Length: 181
Image (cartoon, rainbow, N blue to C red; front, side, top):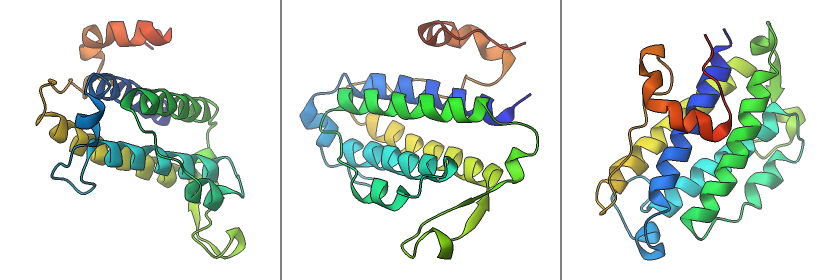
């Protein structure tokens, strides 16, 4: 079992549900000030996507990762953000699907401002674990902020256990995925 692929797929499904709910808000509600680390749904969810782009660049060995981070243009609408996040999530799923035994120990370089040659090198497995934790952390914040609107926050944690498969049938079908046995 490729646990990273399971996590990437679960993350994509959770993002689709959350951003689908957020996309029903007005633009004013999407940008409205809220209590959280980033003080709006727009800022929080754009932060998630920008970080995803940076870490995906590192995982793919893209030396332009620092420029990718710095040149990020935030999505103005939740609908636009949802489409961009889904593309990023598809890229992460594809990366995880291509992992082979031992890849989790392969080191990837990061440019934290001093160039790749002077930046840290991290094992792929730790980078992925961090990326999934980062997404979950900020999705939780966005979920709580959404609870302060007229839109009911969606269920986000029924994408991994086999016993919960009935709750994700529509989500899986929307992506053309079948449940692994």
